[in-house]
Image 1: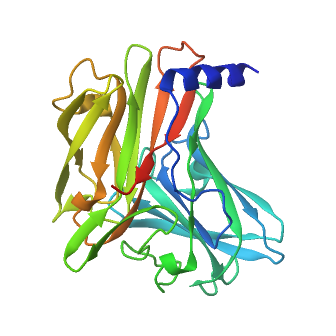
Image 2: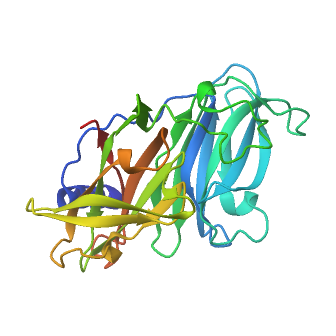
Length: 301
């Protein structure tokens, strides 16, 4: 009941969002968890729960990439038909990855838990993910996006690299046709004042940096009175951008609640897919230290 009251209060504060066309909650052959980190124990870690909706057992291969999509480590686990499987990142990562941010790709493969083969295969798995935080006594919801068979190239699942996840059909898109690049626009929410702070996650198949240099994107920043200010939104990692909007240079001091509008046609790659969400934290403890997640709406201008 306490959590329900907190959720109602937060919703009233943040306001209603706009419906988005992301695909989530649909079983597929794989899933993307776009933002993953742990602090060295189970008190502060990403946790993922899987369901195998199929009528046969499967092997699920996983790969952890850093923010620049460099392969760091991978593994696999078996699931029987109808199985539920927890995946606690701090217990699976191995040594030396404390406070290392990145993302996880999971996909069903032909093989067993001894990795005799690692060819991608069809399956019906789904997942739900959370970021556990013992200090606040809460868990932030992390959106999980289905990966279709056609999203991955034919690299072996134990040797996935930066270019293996070519598209994400469940996400938003930008494309170049006839030399003209067009992309969907994303409105990234923020909330930051004496009570709240925010972190924006922007994940893409690539293109968030240019030739190894930070991507600097011109955006329009709006407050809750429809005032607009043009500023720069900077990503210094090529595929996972994790931003504190309070640090954006040129933001008016009174812009404490609103959204940042970014057109993906600015990304450096010719084609790609992206997803975005914002986590808002009750830093003052007004609502019991609650953490809430907003899936940032995307649309075609």
